[in-house]
Image (tube, rainbow, N blue to C red; front, side):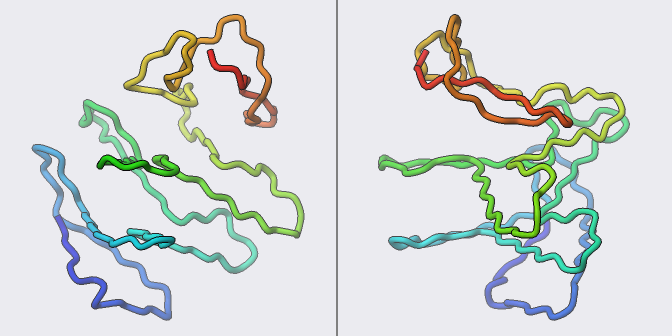
Length: 187
């Protein structure tokens, strides 16, 4: 594992594009192993915010094909090497203690759209792409480690036999607009 210590004292400032290519020794995993660890501790004051890792990518020019702030990719070898799940990114939030927590989520998606130059083709919070030729990614969500509750509204998924929807959430599949049906009535 590579370690970077005392990075706040280094505080590098770059005026030209910099590309860091890291080629550490391969890991032989016998337990959970980390290629790169960054650990921070923060002391929070009232009204403050803390970010452990901040990346801002500002684009320029006029003819780019795409841009992103973080790109993650995991490649499975031609012979099976992973017996559990394989994913490009995993996020976890741990809430401990005996106090009330305000807003809680594992992933917050924020959109700041101030473009006045015309319409955006497909404005969305999440953009799903399937680059595979086998078309095997056929589930929008897989909700693991959860059971379906029967009309009590206390679980993530609850049956609602005989219910009619009162609300809908818009999604788009290809060029077709669809709606996920919802109701504001529990159970």
